[in-house]
Amino acid sequence: MSEERELLRSTVAALVDKHATPEAVRTAMESDRGYDESLWKLLCEQVGAAALVIPEDLGGAGGELADAAVVLEELGKALVPTPLLGTTLAELALLHAGDHELLEGLAEGASIGTVVFDPEYVVNGDIADIVIAADGTELTRWTDVTAKPHATMDLTRRLSSVTAGETAALGADPGLADTAALLLAAEQIGAAARALDLTVAYTKDRVQFGRPIGSFQALKHRMADLYVTVQSARAVIYDAIADPSPASASLARVFASEALTDVAAEAVQLHGGIAITWEHDIQLYFKRAHASAQLLGPPREHLRRLEAQVF
Image (cartoon, rainbow, N blue to C red; front, side):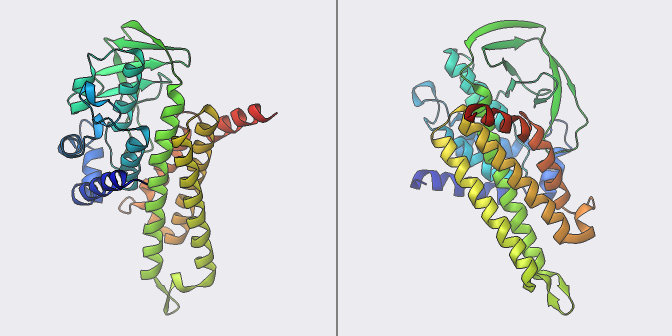
C-alpha cells in the first residue's frame, strides 16, 4: 500500500476511533437520517471521503477506487452508518455518463447519492438527493422518487424500496454492479477484521477453569484459522480492486461474504450467551454479516456466475 493510501487509512481510523464509538454508532443508526451528520461532515471536509473518485479538474481528490475501498474498510470495522457507498457509486455513474453538473454537491457531502440495482432494496434510498438506476445495460436518472423505508435486521444500514416519478436516460451502464460489489467487499472485510479483534480480546479476558479461555489450544486454533480467512479474503479483494473485472468482483464478494459470516458465527460461539444480547456489539456484526451477504446478490449467485465462466 502506498504511503498516501496508508495515511488516508490512518486518518479515517483516527476519526472513527474518536467519533464512532459503539455508543455513537447506536445513536446514529437510530437517528432520523440513519447516520451521524457531524461525522459525515468531518469525513468530507477533513478526508475528502465523498470526493475521492472524482478527478481534480472536476473539484475532486483525483483518487482511485482503492482509495474509496480503504475508507469503506475502516468505516466497516466499526459498522459506521454513512452514505458513502451510495454517494460514491452515484459519482461513478455520473462520471461515466459525462454528467458533471451534480458532482460538486456530492463531492462536498452536501448531496447524498445512491444507485438502484434492485428497487426493493436501495441503500440510503429514503435520504438520497440523487438517485441513479443501473440495470446492467443502461444508466437512468430517477427524479421525483418515492421511498418507503424497510424494517431491516441490520439497523446500521438503511434500506428502502424506491419508485421513480420521472426518469432520464444517462447512457450505458459500465458494470456499476461489479464496482459496488468490490466496494461492499472492502467494507465487509473491515467488519470481519474488527469482529475477530473483539473476539480475540474477549478470550484473553474471559476466565474459565482458572485460565483465560484464549489460552486453550483448541480456541487458539479456531482463531488462527479465522485470521487466515480474513487475511486471505483481504488479499483477494484488493487484488480484484486493482484489476477489476466481472469475475474478480464476484470472487471478491464470495470471499468477503464467507469471511465475515464465518467470523461472526465464531464470534457468537466464543463470546457465549452475551453475544446475542442487545447490549453487546457482536450481535450487530452478526446481523451485518448476514444482511450484507444478501445485498447485491448472495454468494451463490456469484458462484454461479464464476462457474459459467469456467464451464
